[in-house]
Length: 77
Image (cartoon, rainbow, N blue to C red; front, top):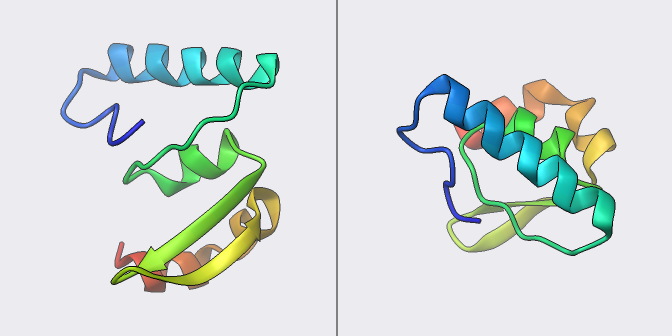
């Protein structure tokens, strides 16, 4: 999913994340690209952060979520 929530109403965004959570419970692998990195990390097991096409961070999503200051600096938010 590439920016599946971009520009949508909050209720639709919430529904998309609910469906993503449902898909995750089935064991189907997904690749999610979204500006809301907190939501992405909350709905994934593993994450990769890229900058200019190079991997700058990767690992378990929970571990990356535990270092928000690093991600905010990397992602410029």
